[in-house]
Image 1 (tube, helix red, strand yellow):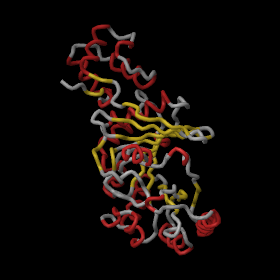
Image 2 (cartoon, helix red, strand yellow):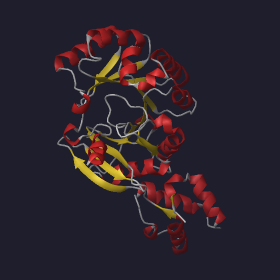
Image 3 (cartoon, one colour):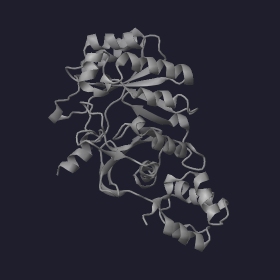
Image 4 (cartoon, rainbow, N blue to C red):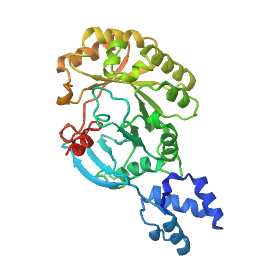
Length: 344
C-alpha cells in the first residue's frame, strides 16, 4: 500500500487518525511540532512519542515527497531548487533573501495550462496539480535547508496558476499561517493569479488577510490577448471589476504585477491606458523588467523607458514600485531552470 504524505493532513485530521488508533490526541500536536517547528523527516527521531506510535506512523505515512535534482545560487544570494516528485515530474522553488526578510517563491502545479508569452512555466505543457503536502514540502525545504535557514514571507508565484489548484493551495496556506504549522502571518503570504476571476471571488469570502497579486501585464484587451490567453476567457474589464469587488469585500489592497517587455507594453500609450483603468482604485502596481528569454524574443526595455513608465504612473496618481529581477544568472524566473533541465 502506498504511503500518504502526512502533511496532507490538518491537525484535526491527524487527531482523527490517532483516535482511530486509540492513541492520545495530544500526540498530534507533538507530531506537528516535530514537522513544522523542528523540520524532522524521520518519525523514529520524534523522541517524545511512544516508540510503538513512531513505528505505526512510519508504516502509514511519509514525511517528504520531494527529491532534490539541482540547486543553484546566484551572486545576489537568491537560491533556486529543482525538485523531482514521486512521479518524476519537476517543480521549482526559490529562496530570495533581502534586507530584513527572506521570501520563498513556491510552485502550485507541475507545468501550467495558461501559456503566458513571457513565462517559461508552461512551455512544456501542464502535468498535474500539486497536493498540499507537495506545496508544504517546498516551503519546509526552503526554511530548513536553504542557506538562509529562514522564511519570513511566502509568495505563490512559482510554476503554475494557484487558483487552478484552489483547494490544495488554500489548504497549504492555512497550514503555513496556523500557529500549529509554520505560523507565518497572513499578510506575509501572497497568492498571485493570472486572472482567474472565480478564484478571486472565492478568496474574497475566505476571511483570510493574505495578499492578492494579479498578473496584469497589459492595459488593453488586444495586447493582453496576445501575451496572456486567459484574457480571452476573463477579459480585462471583467478582471478589473472583480478586483474592485475584492477590495470592497476584504478592504485589502490589490497588487498588479506588470512585466515590462520591450516593444510590447512599455511605451507612453501603454502607461496612460494603465493609469486610466486603475484610477480611483486602492491598488499598487509592481513593475518588473522582463527576464530575457531569447527563444521567445522577450527582453526588458531600456532603463530610461522603465523610469519614464514609473514616473508617469506616479504623476497619474497610481502607487507604484519597481522590482528588480533577482537571480538572472541562475535562471530564477518561473520555469526557466525546469525548462532547461527537461530539455536535456
